Length: 160
Image 1 (cartoon, helix red, strand yellow):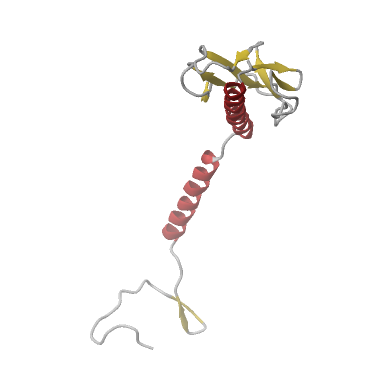
Image 2: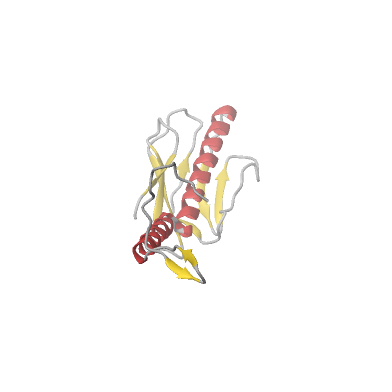
């Protein structure tokens, strides 16, 4: 069956005849190019995967930012001073009703470095404050949660 227009010739690769039929296949060069493309794609996916411990620490920091801002808003609304400080296995908000906000880390390996105490209000402007979050399993990694007193708390990397 002809698939080209009349009068034109298709350039064909040399074919191998098996049982009287022409068999076309891939050249070794074409196969090597496909294998190279697959290898590059695999390497790209492997490099884009994140360290699960670092991702967990960043989730903890973002959650702490939200909790600190919530406690700060509750302190301003009620006019009662609220303090945050770490305790064994979690943290505590002094000045809020018991269990008004969560008081445990998402991962049991998370810890606050040092013994920071954050004063969250009731004044609208608080002093610059920060806390370093780390992991008991990865001592080389930490995330800083800080505010300059005017802006909300924010999380940022402290170490690679």
